[in-house]
Amino acid sequence: MAITLNEYTAKLINKILFATSQEEVEQFINADMKALEQNKVNGHIIARFLDKIIGELCLFNPMNKDAQQWSNITTAKVLFNRIKSMNLRSVQPLPNV
Image (cartoon, rainbow, N blue to C red; front, top):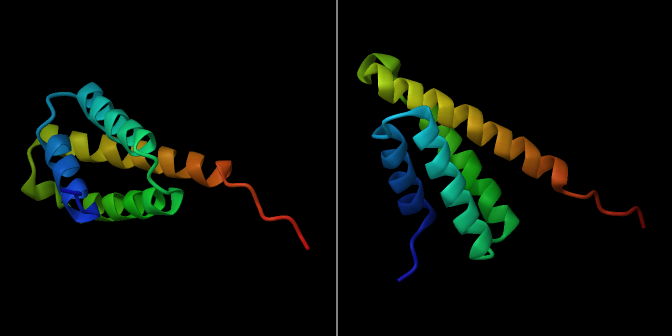
């Protein structure tokens, strides 16, 4: 059974929220990004995933989370934005015809 982008995002956000350290957040993100690459997920789908998860993380209110959760959310946003900017730089422009 294939997992949807929404389910994948929800599971990763849950892992991020309940991670015990920033290093654990980074490990979860790296493992999930590696899994997407190993499963040969299309680059456009990965870009949509990054946009979706960054957007979801931005919706959290720091007043509704404990200090560790808010730290994890902030770390994840930074890491996902770095990944997104690296992916954008790796895209080659189409040649002029």
